[in-house]
Image (cartoon, rainbow, N blue to C red; front, top):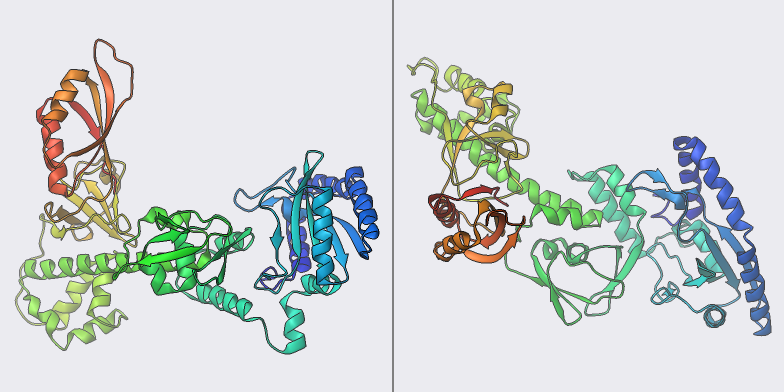
Length: 526
């Protein structure tokens, strides 16, 4: 919050107190290095030379050498205190006017040539907190130094942040107000984003990108096109399929650079993003919105699974499915503290409610006094799927089940369905009842396979492998064949990369390789 409000002195002090407590010994060593950096002879020589050059140009200035505090040495991603950093010292140059800021920048650049693409103009383009300054980096004697040039008013604003303007005018800058609203919206939502991730994101460097109209969009360094799209509007982010960066067409996971002009390309429908996109997003808003889309997909699957389980279980007890359409079903749902029947389906599909307790309430309420069949045993309830959504379907690595196979078991949970083979050794350690698991089958002809697949063939002669691939089903689109091991007795291990359109096509390819008598290993990529 201190950083967002521009209270950088407070932010540094809070970080210092926390880091001294977390790293009592190492922080003392780093503090000693900080004191040495402030008295570095090279930095003092730079200050004296710059002061003399500014005086010759009739520019009144005050130059301060500021060693960066403990917070600059903390790596939030690895949660360690670094021994050294790229910019241990900053040189603050305070002048009388905005014009003098630009004149001083020219003098600094003539004395110490800047590192390419490191000059930042926060006077013409203030940060959302109202922060203004000119920044330039130069490599001097093998060490990088950061020059910050500002007026006295800018210096005071940098210390008091948005609070200064807030107190003076009674209102905050519009850009900052929008950012605060976004952060509070994310905090108040049902996002899976942790507070640690929010804090980590707030400490990242920023880049400036632009819309085609020239509007500036400030994003964390390393942001991708989706971060930009969600920053513009939630609906644009959800339908973002690609973008134009300058004149290049790129994907939604393309990493943006400082100064990029981005045109977001959208489709009519929401894009079903792959889970890997979430790891690449840098802004809390984009991560929160994508998490919300993922939760919606999980909710949809859970509802389908729960409905299938309950309807089949009713049939096993001899209770007609029409009981679920009766008005009294509202009272049954209320017993479980739920709003409607769909909510009950989702509870069953996530494993939060068990079928026996729901059947008991139906028997003792809606279907009381009527004859039913004995409790079922043996056969499992079935769920038929036509999707390989990696957000809601997890194929367990312990047994590597293939969706083309029959007899797969699905365990409903908060994340969707966890799929195992019936002969998986881990099942012996899991204590579950018949009602807690479903048999999962895929409609192979309707299920699209989006990802490129890889098949490993073991100990196959080159000619034999080429012959098998040459007679493979037409649905197999071969991408690459890689030699994994050097041939011994004309045999080698190979990795075959290919694509297919549907699960039915994949089943045909695997059947073809199996019929050829080759030894192979395959794990499907969702």
